[in-house]
Image (cartoon, rainbow, N blue to C red; front, side, top):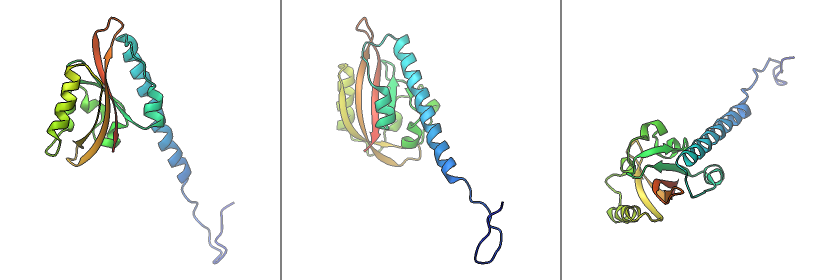
Length: 164
């Protein structure tokens, strides 16, 4: 039975099911994060990573972006939520270096600190001014780690990032 406006006795058009829209948006984000976790685990297994991180906590609970590079620092993986932070889709970033995010206001001292830590295969934590695809700057807090395989060879770097 159609709803009727009690003031003028006319039929009222049904309201859109907004809660379903909100649910589906959240559900799709969660499914992408689940796919990201599976892809990271696949990488970890195929490259025999020695280190273990709680990817689900970092990606889902803390909503951090995860970026993984090869030893030469070319991006091999970026989580789907990177598009919200940078405007870049993961597929656009594969084969690029993280320098794609740098720009005019990126602090050279912070970049040098990160570069030095990576060259020495050491962990780092820093906040840097990065740039979105649109050219707009944003502060990005990054925790980065070298990843070694079971033979102690460097196979990847992983970064957990969040807009600061």
